[in-house]
Image (cartoon, rainbow over all chains, first blue to last red):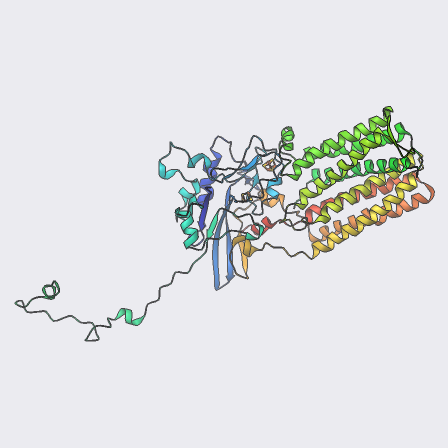
Length: 243
Length: 326
Ligand code: SF4
Ligand code: SF4
C-alpha cells in the first residue's frame, strides 16, 4: 500500500522558512477556504499554519550546533488522531496514506489535536474546524500542472532541497532510498504512531588525505619534476605506450 | 493542558446527575427488599429524577460551548466503534432519556408490578427501567473517564484511576445532593444517603490522592531528544517558529504560576473532602437542611477546582516543541 510522505534533511535545512510561507500561500488560496490570520497587523498576530520551522541548539558553545527543524503533520501510518474523532471527519486515505480532515464534517471539538503527540493540528479561528497539512493533496494529483510541479508547495519552495517527497513504501522511490541509505528516522517512536514523514540526521562531511596521496609513491625519482624532453627523432612516451 | 470551562462544567454537572440518579435508585432497591421504608413515588423519585435531569441537561448545554460547530454536534455519534467521545455523546442523552422515563413512571404512577420474587419482593416497571439506567449511568462514567484515559501519551490521565475518580467523585456529589434532597422532602432516607456520601467521599479521597501521588512520580516518556530525534544531553529550543501565540501555545498550557497551581490543588483537596464531610456530619446529627445544602455547594465548587486541576496537570508531549518564542 502506498504511503506518501516527506523526508526532511536536517543536514541541509537552513531555517529560511520558505516552506512555511509557500505552504501558507498555497493552502490559504484553495477552495477549502483561507487559513485564519487574526490581528495580522496589530498586537499578538496569530493564525493557522500547516508547517512551522523551529530552531534548536544542540550542545554547548563552542561545541554547539544549530538545528533547524521543520514540522508538519507526519501522516502517521498508525495515526492516533483518527480513531478518536467522533464524527469521522479525520480520516486516513486508503490509496495514498494521507491523513485528512473533512472540514464539512468537523465539529471543532479539538479531541484529535489532543490525541496527536506532535502538536501539528491547529484549530482554525476563522472556520472553527481542525486544520493540518494535507500534503498538498490538491496539487499532487492536479493534471493541469506540469508533472514536475505535482509536489507539495513546500517541496517546490525549498532552496536547499531539504524536503523530499514520495512514497515511503515504494523501495525505489527517492524518499525511501534516502531513508534507507541516509539513516532516516521517525519522531517520538515511543508511541507507536509510525510517522510516515522521516528526518535525515545531521552529518559531518570530512575527507581524510594522507601525505602519500599527494606524492606519487611509484615515482622512481621520489620527487616530482619535469621529465626530460625526448629528442624529436625518438618516439615520444605516447608512442611507446600506445602499443 | 489548558482547562476548558465548558468541559469542567460538563463533567462535574453530569457527575452530580448520575450520582443523584444512582442514589434514588439505591434507595428504591433497599425499599424493595424492605430494608428501608418506601418513598412517595411522585414527590421523591419523580422530583428527584427531574433534578437529576436538570443537572444532566445543564452539563449537556455547557458542552456545546466547547465545539467550534455546535450545529453539527449530531454528527459526533457516528464513530462509536472507535471513539470514546462518540460513545459518550450517545450515552449521555440515552442516560438522560432513561432518567426522564424513570421519573415519569414514578410521577405518573405508571408502575405496574411485573412479577413477584419469592412471593415477597415486588418487581415493578420502575425497578426494571432503573436497573437498566444504572448500567447506563456507569457506562457514562466509563465513557467520560476513558475519553481522557485512552490517550496514552497524556500520561497523567492514562490510568484506570481516571475512570475510578470520575465515578467516585460524581457519585459522591450526587449522593450529597440526594442527602439534601431527602432532608428537604422530610424523608427517612437522609441518614442513609448521608452514610453513603461519607463512604463515597472517603473512597474518592483515597483514589484521588493515589492519582496525585502517581502523577507526582511520573517519568515522561517523551523528551526533547525523542521529539526531534537527536541524541544529546543538552538541547535547547531557540525559536518555536513564530513570535505571538498559536493554537498550540493556547490549548496546551494552563498559563498559571506554580503558586496558583498548587493553591488550586490544595483548594480542591480541602473543599471536596474534609469541609463537606464536616458539614455533612454536623448536619446529620440533627438533620439540618442548610448544612446539607452548604456541604453540597462547597463540594461542587471544590469539584470545579478538582476538574480544573485534572486538566491543567496533564502535560502534553507537544509542549516540548513550544518552549521558546525566540
Ligand atoms: S502527526 Fe499528528 S495529526 Fe499527523 S497523522 Fe500523526 S498523529 Fe495525526
Ligand atoms: S476537531 Fe474535528 S476532526 Fe478533530 S476530532 Fe473533533 S470533529 Fe474530529
